[in-house]
Length: 419
Image 1 (cartoon, rainbow, N blue to C red):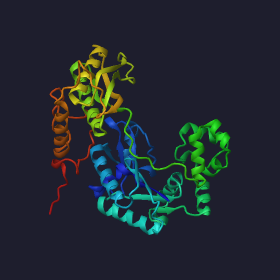
Image 2: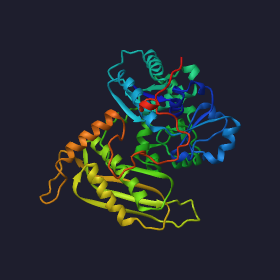
Image 3: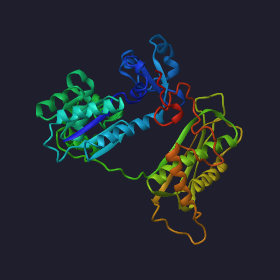
Image 4: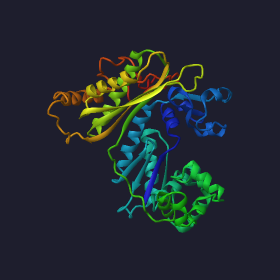
């Protein structure tokens, strides 16, 4: 049996953990630069705020219903996610962290459990320990556990946050209830094609022939159909090293000078290098790109990227920042108002299998230095040690006018208790 554990309205729930006065109130979380809605509480959904709603267009609705609006606080959300995942790992040895707020548990070998009682205990532990409400769906396949989780989340009072699809009757009832566009792995375009063929529910989808599904979609959707029919075809995935690592950001305002954009590109390189070392890889190429604001018709437009082939494989922050700056120097043009930039690392190899170059290579002391810097930053807080070319005060320069406190990751912002 597989279980899918999903945190309910995760970003909004994180904001409520330290602000109990928000319980029962409509809460929304905005994307980078406070652009659009990326998370909503149930109360916000009820008053008609759609996912992806541009914040400026819904300002009147926010005011009318006294909606609490927050800028995305990813430092807080990431830490709360880690706390939830660490708790889940104690209940099941085989776990796949699927996203920041979802995880699959494989209960193989644990058939002696009473799944309902065991899962309800997990729900209580997570809520008590973190304040984050969760829903759990259990079934014989990963796809069906997704369906079961939707039922648990849709009917919390009836299920107490846990739903198990363990009989054919429950499976058919759930599939006939689930809309085709809500099937895990069915994208928007595929959903439109299926609806045009009068395929309205997950049950309708499972009645299609394999050959038809593969001809109109792909073998992936064929496996999905078999999963929904109760045949396990998708196993838990281990954590695989990424093949590319990217850091891109939209600036809080237009940048016109080279030094402004260079500082951002250097900071993005630092972030990428940290992720690269975390998975014990080195890279042999990177991409740097810059672009102006495509929504500003009154401004001149420019967009350019460049691939920089490195003379040696490295994961040194110093080296990667240097090569990224070299790339930026080649594509930057004066006279434009830049709104976004990014760095993408690619062509990876293991840091233990770097091909040595006789004439040019990474400074031999960089590896020791990077390890020391990573330890300091991890122990004392993110980005305590920076490159001199970085802004010493800010990491991400974004418009975040409604940012909540980083209660769990920054000592100066921990919750204050008055007695």
